Length: 199
Image (tube, rainbow, N blue to C red; front, side, top):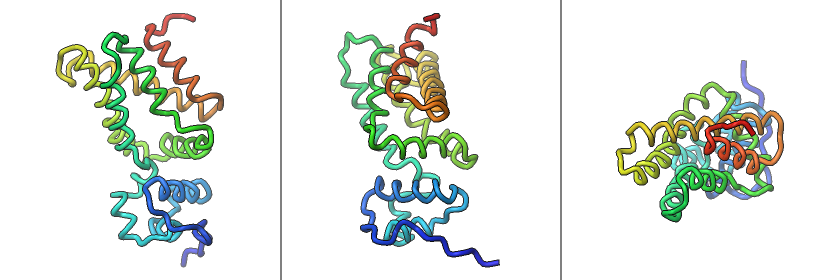
């Protein structure tokens, strides 16, 4: 049985020329058709590029959802490294995580779609472990520098994993209940810094 032709948002759309533009086009398709039902060929056509060009930007369909995540993590590393030496470690992480997730209010609908996909699509949940490892390594490296230890030592590792758990949990609440994402992250990391003491 042949697959029906699906209209794409590519009609009248300028050719996508950056990873973020391609991701934006892709998220529109994923939101309307579902991640698994959307083919790479449909994404390339909607973006106005060839399949080969698409794979020059992204190694796989899974990677498209993440946009320029690796570049963002590098900026995150720099913001951690450039923090004042006398600023408490957990306060630095709290501040930098909030800044890392500040995409502006106009980008929130797209971010919600992205995070809903990442947290619900099985193929993306597995892939998320690889991408989150980059983010955790940035935190572990920062903590290790402050501790004078290896980044795979106990304290850097548990701080990074705790930060990932708090971040992921906050995103799940935000997806389900809405609200101000940055305020939720700030509150959540404040609770983490306080050892989750009762409010």
